[in-house]
Image (cartoon, rainbow, N blue to C red; front, side, top):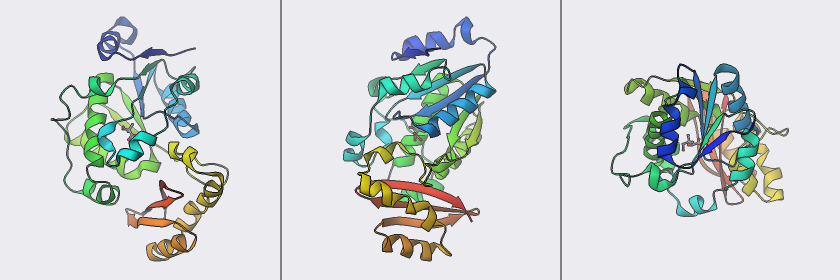
Length: 253
Ligand code: PAF
């Protein structure tokens, strides 16, 4: 079945308060669109565990520290709604003006972990992520919200925020979905030129090399520019650039 699509926040809020949602469990999958098999897996899990499934598609400007990255972010709304058919019951596609009536004067800041790894390379990134996730959780009021483990630091910061602010929602972590050659699915992969896409498959393999230093060396040797390779809680995380595209991934060690 085709999902209902809401571009107006006011109309969505009226729908959320309607009989259709009364007493129903609600699964929520927040995304920035350009959906792929990884998002599909989140939607499938949400579908299996809830009576209603809400998908949000919002390219959140406040989490982009690089305006070129924001401008180049793929936007494929029609394909996204088609992929969600039969999985999401409702899709919300708010405008930046509707999401930020305060012009981002109010925001959520975490002062420790958000400053490391991704946060050290993308100043302000997690303020933008946490703020928009809080806004979306308030708009959707889900029973459960689904996040991919590929964005490991994001997942942990969102969990921390939900606990710290007593938000009545369960955060469900879902395994990273990979292409046949091992590259983690990402909306950014479609920006890779074919030769760079082929080389990118080495990223998760080389990330596993002996030590973080060895992995960084092996990745540089294979033509990647390395932002960081680090370990936290038995997980090795990395961010690299190839062909002008920034990729992140993580593996258990
Ligand atoms: O992971 C993403 O796609 C985004 O960071 C999220 C959680 C939808 C917030 O904009």
